[in-house]
Image 1 (cartoon, one colour):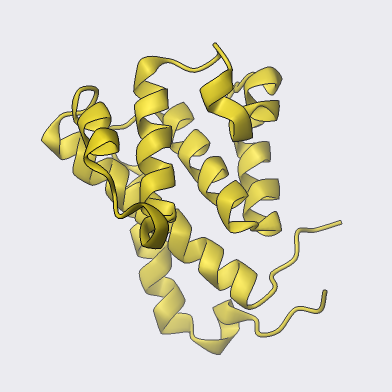
Image 2: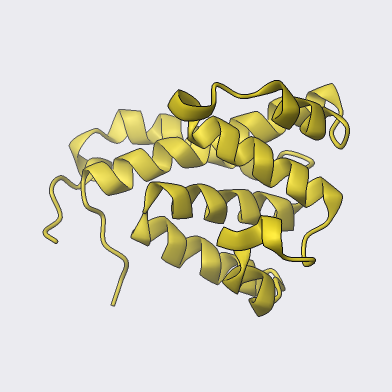
Length: 146
């Protein structure tokens, strides 16, 4: 695959806004391991090789267990994730696949049983942000470093 546009240099102001949003997400009081799982699961769904490479490395640096990383795409069939993580992953899938799921009540109720209203908004902003990064990276064919 050939890279298309270097979106960082093509529109520095737009990327400053994205970086500011990412910086805000990094300061949210949600568990860092949870945020990395959300970023990875979203990137798996969206097929974003660049983000999968980056966030799997970040998760490992943060102490994430390899076994959990290997089975993240099948999280529903494993015993490796906590109820809170499962709720976040279900909400992540619902929002990432929004045109198919329409954010069903079942996933919302599962999430609100584990997260406060503030945490729900914070989690949703984190999901929204990684979806935006995925669209930039996939759309413009940003490649992971070899």
